Length: 214
Ligand code: AMP
Image 1 (spheres, rainbow, N blue to C red):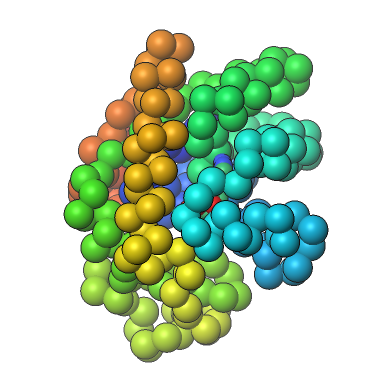
Image 2 (image 1 turned 45 degrees about the vertical axis):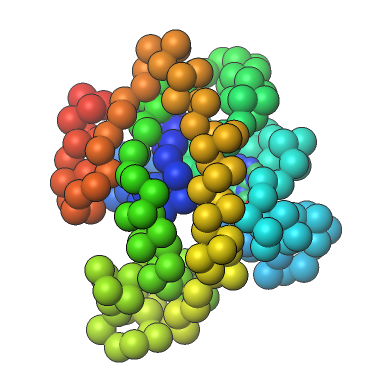
């Protein structure tokens, strides 16, 4: 079970990935999470990535391709994986193809979750994340029981720097220019599943399960 989750920021890739982990017991590999951890820890990777992330731009291909090449070799990815937020450009997709070929495997399903721009802005401006466990909430659509406190681990909730409206518009523009072409790219390989993401979390998940044949 090797999956790619494709879709604009705010489409719910991370949320669906969590449900997929539970169902198929395979790891979620999110380049955004890996980069945010590096920024938090102040590693050289974090220092290099931070400016791009704060501006809503993409981190250079060479950097994220290196991260994925290493991560996919780890033991927990042997049974399968869910790529969340990678690839985001055609060169990344091509590099992924080569990495997987070298490992003797290939992508089974590319799931594209599709949501229109105004809905994405509504979702992202209200998004709050837990500093401690990464769980995500929404001030209106999925509020925590106590404001500012994570339901799962009681950690402190915060708004990502790149979830401010101006940066969100920039991230969506970057998605349209650099990542959306991947829909056509993967439709040629025949394993693209397009899912309407304007629905409840549970509905979207059932559509994914159905699309991949259970
Ligand atoms: P995300 O959490 O997936 O929305 O990623 C947050 C930010 O991390 C993005 O806006 C980019 O700056 C950077 N990033 C994450 N994944 C990638 C990728 N595959 N290629 C380039 N930049 C990325």
